[in-house]
Length: 152
Image (cartoon, rainbow, N blue to C red):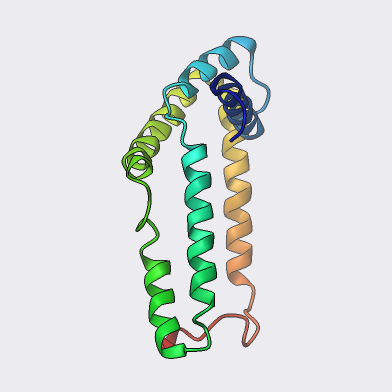
């Protein structure tokens, strides 16, 4: 969030390169350079996302002030949770869809740069997550651990 645009760009490149490397293993210098160039094509919205989070936190704090009045609090809380994008700055709202599309294009382009061994590393990691989700889905849920959905 802080720093010059060049510092923020470098920090974003470093963070995203680390994420890719965490998924696929070591990247060659050539891969890093190409991926860094691809990152540039994704609009930088971290500062907008940060300000939107702060806005949402303030809205939530204002909602909490109403919690003693259940008749007013509950519907407003539900509306606040359902309409996540309401109240976003026009710039963030405009860039949000573009960022999603560019990020998808980024990952497709990164995939084309990977070696077969790197793809296998990513597939193993995805399979580990799938196995974890399957194991978790088979665990019994303790009574009272989840809200009763029938109340809604």
